Image (tube, rainbow, N blue to C red; front, side, top):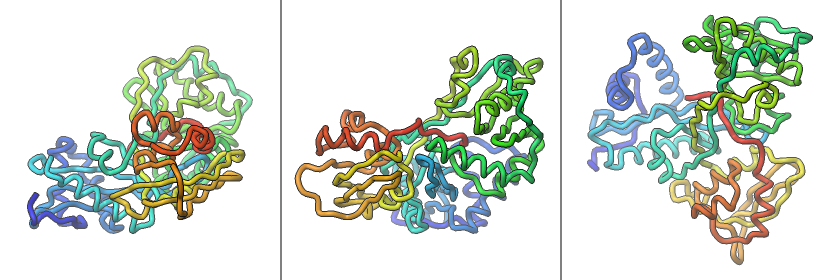
Length: 389
């Protein structure tokens, strides 16, 4: 690797170079998408969230990260959503991608993010950097006629627009807190307002729920649906299903645990789309303190963490969880304690059972008794995302 290679902040005058690298990585961008891409890129640049690797004056790799929050067991945790990772073909396999990502991780640490997440084009580099699978993005398909038959006619439903953005965010928060959801992202009010203003989207609001959907070819596709009661769920699903005379199929980005799976007469079609995303802890104490836990879960246990790329996570820690909250504090561990690297810690945080971590070599030490007390602490509904970023 050349000594001239250095980690840099991307500037506006380097965006053409980034676009050239992007074209070699993902294909040429459609002409109509270029202006929006440039507009978005400038926002990341202005906020110090667009970084790269340069060889001399030439940008040869780039990546950006979103300033998100993510629900974990019903509580919001800041997360750096890594996206647009590109490396010029002639620089691949030379450590440039690792240099880029290590610089990005340090930038996210400096910005105070306890978590980072991404959708991997390949798992190899990200596992080397401490990421592990955290959950999935699921798209199910249903017969529109089945949804139309769900009823809910007693529930009032009206068209929604950008003026309803605050109410939509409120409903999302109430739902995820109540269900102790893990995985979905929290979007800023501005983004939600623009989403509801998009004429290609159809939004409907009830007192305790909403749905946003659009056409996807000859099918209808639900971006998000939230319901605070069975009756509202039936009404919103039936609203989308009312298009069954034109669209025979409704696709939906939802949790694999969504109640609709138990409500429809026929199961979802077999062509389920499943995209896996990866998680990494950047500040283990902050990530534990921000995350929710089951109200009746309780544990007191020592852990030994190793994390060469984020040294602040390493060392001996005491994990205490009670009354729905957790705390990770430095300690002087003694004896045979549970040992985890960054991948094992990310998987545990996401709810992966310790037996699975041990079977894959991502956990060692400790005891089966300690495992039995720790598993329920991180267990919960399947972690999922609705959005690809």
